[in-house]
Length: 419
Image 1 (tube, rainbow, N blue to C red):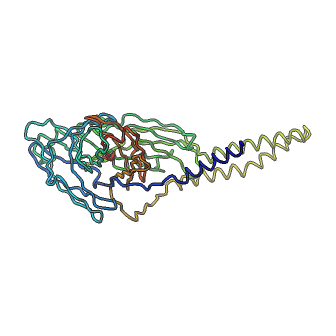
Image 2 (cartoon, one colour; image 1 turned 120 degrees about the vertical axis):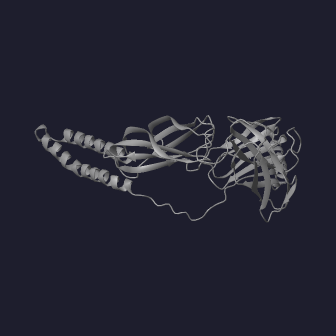
Image 3 (cartoon, rainbow, N blue to C red; image 1 turned 135 degrees about the vertical axis):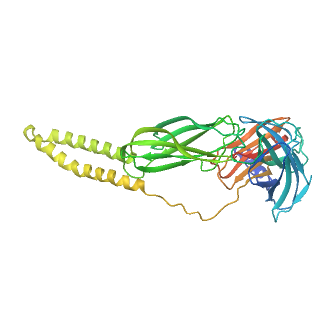
C-alpha cells in the first residue's frame, strides 16, 4: 500500500513538472546611449547644442521619450528633479532597430546669476512617460551624465578662468605584501580639492638600488574623473615574473586633466621597500629544508670523526643552487627593464547599455558595457533613489540583476560611472 502511494505521488510530481510551461524572455527595453558622459564648459546665458547617438538593440522599433534631470551627488544616493536647462526639439521619437538615431538637443545656462562651479545634469531616454510613483508598468531609462562647468569670466585667454580650478593631491599612500596574490601592493587615494572635476593621470615608477627604472605601473587608465571635494581610491600591484630580491623604491608621479589644461605628471611621493619574489622565497625555503634534512641523515649515519666530511659534502651540494639563484636574480633586472608592446587591434564603442526582460514573471536587468567603466542602477522613488546594483570602474562585459517585486514597481535608471 505504501509503495503504491509513493509511486502515485512520484508520477503526479513528474507530470506536474513536465507540464510546467517554459517562457522565453520578453524584451521590455534594450537601449544604449553614446557617449557615456558629456562635459560642457559654459557661462550664464550661453546655449550649447549637443547630440547623442541612441542605439536600439531590440528586435523591433521602440518609442522613446527624452528627459532631463538635475542631479545631486551624495555618495551612492541619487537625488533628482526635472531640469529647466534643456530644450528637446522632439518630445517623442521612434528608434528603429536597424540603425542608430542621432538625437539633437540643447543646454542653456540661465542668465540669472549662477554661482561658479560644476552642475550635474542627466539626459535620459525612457520607454514611456516618466512618473516616479509606484505602478504596475513603471518607466525604464538609460541616462548619460552631463557636467556643466559654469564660469563667471569670459572664456578667452589662458588665465581668464581662475574662478574654476582643479587641485589634485595624493591623500594617502600605503604599501604591503599581499600573500594572496604574492605581490607588493600599493593602495592610495587621490583627492580633488578644487571646484572642477579632474581626471587624474600618472604612474608608480619602481626603481632598483641604482636608481634605474625597472617597472612602470600606470593608474586610472580608464580616464575616470574625480568630482570636486571627492576622493577616489586606487590599487596597483608589483610582481616580477622572475626570481628577484632587492631594496626597491616606489615613486608616485601624479598629474591631471580637465576642461582647461593638462597638468604633466610630477613626483609627489616616494617610499622604499624590500622585495623578495615568491619564486626565490620558495626556492630558499626548500633549499634550507633539504640542507637540514641531509644534515640530519648524515649526523645519524656517519661516525663523529667523519662528520666534518658530511658538512663539506652539504656545502658542495648547495653551491650550484646558490649560483643558480644568483644568476636568476641578475637576469631579472634585465628582464624587468624590457618594455612590453601593446598592440591595439580594434576600437569599440563607448556605450553602457541596459536591457530589461520579463523572465518567469520577474524583471531582470541585463547591463552590458563595451569598455571597462562602472555603472550605477537606481530605483527612482519620489525625488530620491535606491541603489539596486553597481559595479566598480573596471567593469566590462555583462551582468544580470533580478529585481524584487517591490523594486520592479518603480522606475529605474542606469548611469555610467565613468565620468
